[in-house]
Picture 1 (cartoon, rainbow, N blue to C red):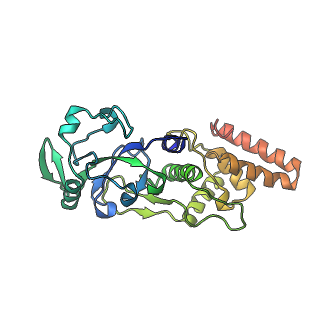
Picture 2 (spheres, one colour):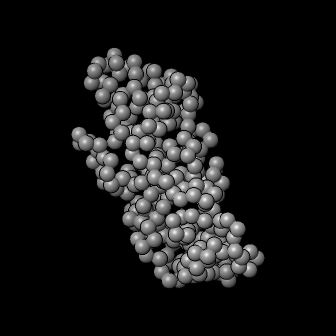
Length: 283
């Protein structure tokens, strides 16, 4: 997620191309790329906003093009495709037909899937305006938190938001979904109220646990300001997850508003909790 932001927001940035999948209607019946434990979250994009050209590079379900290894350049001017991938190119219309019929390719032969089909691939350029939602691959707490942090990362970079008003920014946010890794169930939304409950669960844990361990989070962090959490809850969450710089400064400023003694006490307790959790990022 941080890579997407860096490559699409820097001055003079060219379109950032990445493998995507064109799912069946309702996102049911296709198993997406990756293992749940390794690729725990992803981005849902608006196909109309992507403005895919008719000659966009795409490959059938079951071919497993793995374009990250087969394309030598990701710029619009010079995209070089490996010969075997070029020979296997398909069309969006064919991908749509196969998805609707539940078909996939197996060594060049179309077959009807018994349950779900493997992912197909469309080599598309991500733009800020094409992002509809961030999804988690399961209902595991760590995966949901990762999706929330990814959402915050994208919003901070792509959109101008003002959450210093009395009313929290709850509307017009990038949605959080859970898309079942098996492809057998429809996507389910994680509403704002449920996200607050998740954070409350983290804050209520007696033993500090770092949710950064075991997840490829990098420098992602959570912007807790829209949730209007109490100072103690926000700092306990920081020790386990890691708040964004702006959210942490806001929380510490609220603590300092009571007294400097209160600020020092809260900061020391949070540092101890972060160290106990093994969360060097938060410490």
